[in-house]
Length: 313
Image (cartoon, rainbow, N blue to C red; front, side, top):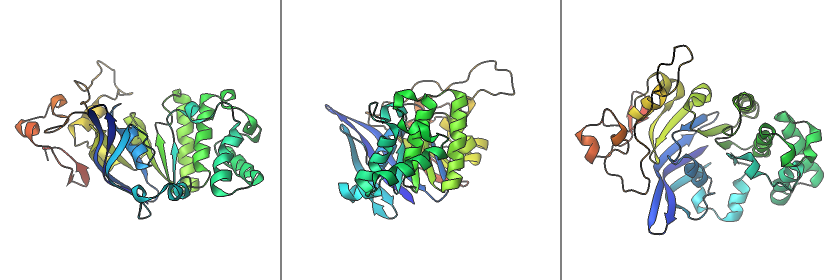
């Protein structure tokens, strides 16, 4: 349904190029819940914006293909992209308050795309908006509210309802619950899962909370230094992590069944994405590193039903 092939993207700033996405490839198939996890600054949000052709200057896509039903998005003009957006692909952004215009009512913001881009009448648009808001648990009387009159959780539900308006095949969700408290997070995630079954869409879910993905995702990709270092079935990655970075992320999760003696963390800090990386990007933080890691970059290999990039395999 959606495929990214060897995508390279980043940001040009003065005489530097921050190479935030490096040769990333992945497929989203029917009924997939594809999770992407990694530390802040590893390139997750840049990957999403580039994959949806929403990367603004100084952001730049250098090379690659982005296929939706076999069409390469990088070859389409603006009107062809307008046809695909909302119908085939949609986005739920990280900060709902920044996604909603503070001086326009909820119903008018949601109707706008239907009326201007897809020829709906105002009455039909408002009717569809009402149906979608009810799907996410918002009553019809809130349609006339302004964003500031809704709680953070309700605003996030509005953005999810907006993404569902045209019943797209694939919805990208960029850390949609990050700014919310854990109780609201849980209710929204349960709602997403119910909607996914009801509306039969695939989801690409981006987060730095890896424990959340293991509960919800069918497939998971671990991202480090602008590239995927491990991709596989979520339960398989959780029960038997192969890449040292994935192991480090899992060891950093506190157990709810044991006494916490000390927090485990990955030493060092994420690599500078403006550097030309020689060898393995994770080597300076890796307890398994050896001579080959210094000079040769590991390629993604298919090992035991999983893709991983590490010289240990």
